[in-house]
Amino acid sequence: MAGLVFWALVVFATVTGLVTAWTLGANSNSPPFAPAIGANAISTMRAAFLIGILAALGALTQGGSISETVGAGLIDGVQITSLAATTGLLTATLFMAFGIYSGYPVPAAFATTGAMVGVGLSLGGAPVFDTYRQIATFWVLVPPVSGGLAYLTATILRRDDIPETVGVPLLAAVVGGIVANVQLSVIPAPADATQNSIAGFFAMLVPLPGITVLATALAAVASFLFIRRRTQQSVDKGIKTFLVVLGSVVAFSSGGSQVGLATGPLENLYRVELGLPGLLLLGLGAVGILGGAWMGAPRLLQATAREYAQLGVRRSIAALVPGFIIAQTAIALGIPISFNNIIISGVIGGGLAGGSAGVSRRKIGVTVGFWILTLVSSVAVGFGLYRAFATVLG
Image 1 (cartoon, one colour):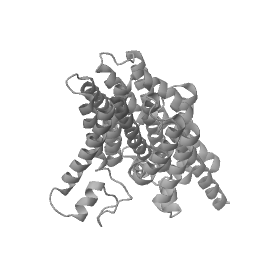
Image 2: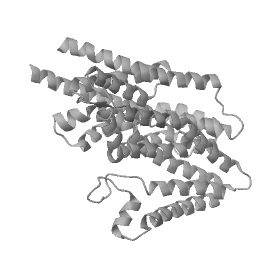
Image 3: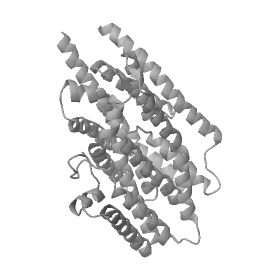
Image 4: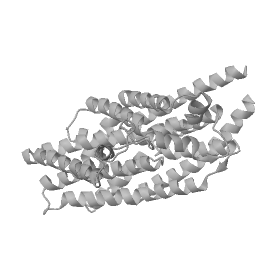
């Protein structure tokens, strides 16, 4: 009977993880392509198709660090059992479902982190305050950093003395240089590492000083020249091309930063109790994200595209550039993040460059307040729900 209960929990936890990943694919991964759709640079269905593929690839190649943090880095002294994993995922999914149907801003990262802390404490584990401080510091810095970078980006794009044939390619150069240094599990790495970047791979092939910097510079220059050529042919065509490229790299990053919220609770169950490789778990999350993007994203894309069309292409670019930078930083540090938090902050920062954020102070206050409420209440719900399940099944 005990074995039957265990396998029932494994199946239920897996299904719950897939549902969570599906929800993330349908919602959190949609904003990156909304500006391109709003600018008529790409159709809704083609965007949904690309979002699914790119986010799934990001999940497979970059999702491991955040998955490990969520699954093993939030609580000390205990292992997350199958029942605890199920409870944590169920709690987070319920919070996200409430946000979707009520219209309230429920960030997936806050709900999942709080739920896993709650079930871990209910198991008798000890809080990891150093990790909490690191995560909290990152979360607090996201709005000013995202907003500040968006403000700077929008200011550059609005300057009359910087033509768009220079300003947009310069942003493309920044993005290209960062892409060259993104850590990916599919790139051959040194013996003491599991991931490597394109620039790092060239440094392996040519072990000379400065090769990493040179590879980064070459990627930046190539990106600059490509977008500059497009903008010289037609400013409108160049901006639309950059929106599609930018949406692609941001969608990829969103998959890498969000999949861990679905797979993290299952880390101990799959990798320790079942002895399965981590890539299989990330593959499970990637499948869920892919399905969510293909089945659920088109409707949301049409709605958000209208919002971004009202913002304008420059403000949209200003919101997405910091989104890409911050998402990659979070992945490198293994910190779970709310992608919508980054995008909202970027939209506000880009709006300030034009003299108005377009968002009321009351709306900002309500949003931040609900984020805090989500984090605190998800800890309490996760703690209580695990105790209830343990009592019934114990």
